[in-house]
Length: 255
Ligand SMILES: NC(=O)c1ccc[n+]([C@@H]2O[C@H](COP(=O)([O-])OP(=O)(O)OC[C@H]3O[C@@H](n4cnc5c(N)ncnc54)[C@H](OP(=O)(O)O)[C@@H]3O)[C@@H](O)[C@H]2O)c1
Image (cartoon, rainbow, N blue to C red; front, side):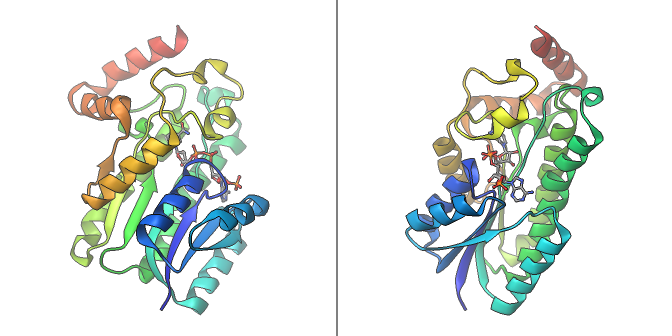
């Protein structure tokens, strides 16, 4: 049975970097690279130390997900790691967002992530890694990022409960909750309409997120908070009431 790693969001940013790092770390037979932009997946596959298999698909599309389900059933692989990194966000008040933008965030960040997890789990055994990419915004309600924040809270809560369910089976679940990561496409797309969200002091680099994730999974940590800001935010969210944090966030974003 071949050992494979499955990465969503592999055409860019964190997903692309996870593909390279986890290939080195777990030395699978294949890495399945999932995203819509096939050319990028083909290029990435050429650079990996193991066989990269581009799976160009839209994970919010029913037909594409059915095809992936059939591919898994036909090949019956041993999934040693699933990384759910595909995700998108849009800044701005809910009233400024279109219903389509809102649906797109929920479909990709919540529905597709949960469905991908459910598709992969029957092929995962003791010791397999399940890495769910959430965000620092999962820790408290976020005015100005209300929908995106709520989708990431879903990812965090879903993953936490799943870790408990999978404990006896020895599947290692880690939810990664980074602050802004400056060297991916995410911030440019998210803040198209709001430049003030672009430059954040202390923003992270992809390499740090990836290294901290690997360490967290090796230690079987539920939550990975790369860097000082994410770690501080998580701690603060446990001590300071949400209402107060929201007031401060609102002041900060409007200044
Ligand atoms: N960058 C940050 O500041 C930051 C901070 C905290 C959390 N995060 C989270 O980190 C994760 C990775 O983000 P990133 O920073 O690496 O962003 P990115 O560079 O924009 O990458 C997003 C990836 O998702 C893929 N994707 C988007 N829609 C898709 C769809 N319908 N089907 C399949 N793949 C799709 C994109 O590929 P295609 O366009 O080729 O499909 C791309 O590979 C996301 O979940 C994001 O919410 C990011």
